[in-house]
Length: 192
Image 1 (tube, rainbow, N blue to C red):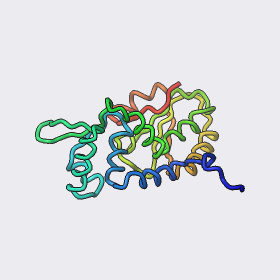
Image 2: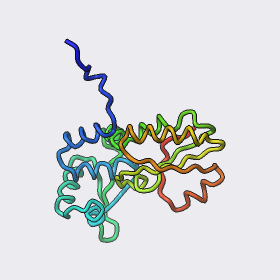
Image 3: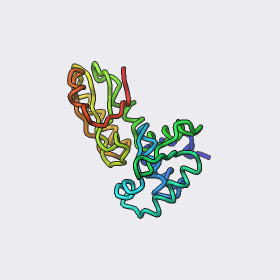
Image 4: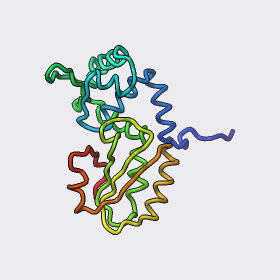
């Protein structure tokens, strides 16, 4: 009997996202996991999450309470607001972070774009994802000298198909980093 071996199935981020939707039945919970586990140290409060997710306060509160009760999130008061963030001491923190990054497709970007593009020093995610906000577009800043722009464009096109998201990128030299990243959220995803 011939057929596709299940272990040979290519797990694209699109399939992983669908799988995450099946495993985690609450869409609000999926949004919260992406929000808090994509970028280390991201924190937010209830009303902000309600606006960002365009969800009712109650549905966000219920999921925040569940994740906090499970120990995946911690909370603390600042002024009159209760801020939530991922608990890096939780035994599943690294696993959940990896699952979220695979779901978003950042792992594929790292593999495809950071190899053989010239004198690449670092790659950063900027924009919405660097703030822990899910988006259809991933913004990258590639830091290096003498980068092969044609090769990068080719890799970006392939990665976009693989992760089913648009990728916007810019290249900067190491001397421009301080100016470019000043007061802008960024997430280092690769460094030579």
